Image 1 (spheres, chains in turn cyan, purple, brown, green):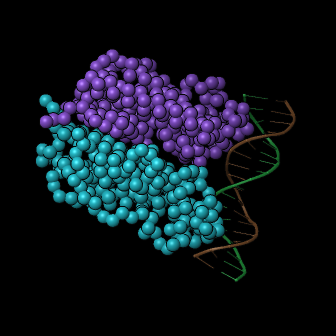
Image 2: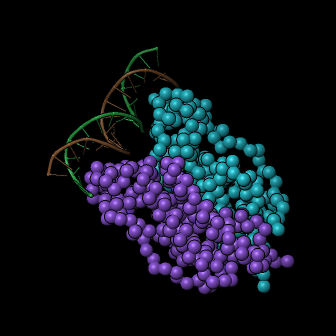
Image 3: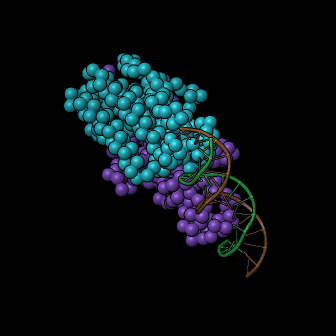
Length: 211
Length: 211
DNA sequence: GTCTATAGGAAGATAGAC
DNA sequence: GTCTATCTTCCTATAGAC
């Protein structure tokens, strides 16, 4: 039987790219996101990005030094936004079980609501320069650490029964991230229903054994 | 406490591309897999594929009509191989619990051992023609149906306690597929350890509630 | 910061000899 | 079935006027 969602909405919803300034850069970033999402980084041309942003090809290079720099911006903002969602859920009051449950819920719902930038952030990383890739890798480690800390707290307080903490953390984040691969707003599942389902399944993984 | 793996090794291990004939096509397919894996479909040139296969650019077109046709071959063989692994595990003897456990184990270990072709198969699909994409989509539906059938059998026999069967099937396959995104043979986890961990977690999702 | 124009090269695919 | 040579198109990025 699914548990109820006791978590509260933590912040006003906003588009991840809203903070990009100035307007021309935001238009280009949005157009690039569209195209990277549907055609991939390699399948996207700077001409097409500029065109969709209502500009000439040359003008793109006043806002960005290269096509790769736009991808880096998207990947960085995507990862920072997902990390923020996870941290906000981790800041909720005890018990650990409801904190962890809220983290899985928020992480999953973030990937459904932001599935376009999430998919680009997760699956186009091979095109980044080594320097940029290292920065994104740092954010990924932070995401893992935030969840692991809360799970360890729950185990220490006897709320969870699990030996393989790293395996659970890996699996729980994996579930959320993989949403970006297949989720479509036109599908049968809402972000809320999906997040509830996955939060339930994650808590089933953690609950004490039955004998 | 992790359960022991009671499943048996079902078939001799083989490389997915071993069945590609003739040799020139197999060499090209292997070179394309390498490059699609590291650079993506859009970041790969037919010149590079041919060069890595030890041939001229023109010769590629005696084996394949286009670059996209190579990707389709890889995606088709990848999906067919994963589906075969799942079907073989589904053919094991009752109870349903050990059949389902074996399916998660085999599906996960397949994605770890074959993470290169799995990653190309899962994440480069946007480059396929609509016709080819539809064929792959059919294989994906088969994969989902095979697991769902076994889970439903387990629920009918009272071995599992889960309301949201579709949610579980989605999550369990998602765990296995996402392995292809991050798995590296150089990492700390072996395919066997990972598959055991995920099979354990999946059975935890299915076991009766504790009150 | 935007435009037009273009540099300079590389892309996918084909032709025709052997 | 492989090669060399090439067609045609398209690419990222820059130059320089306004």
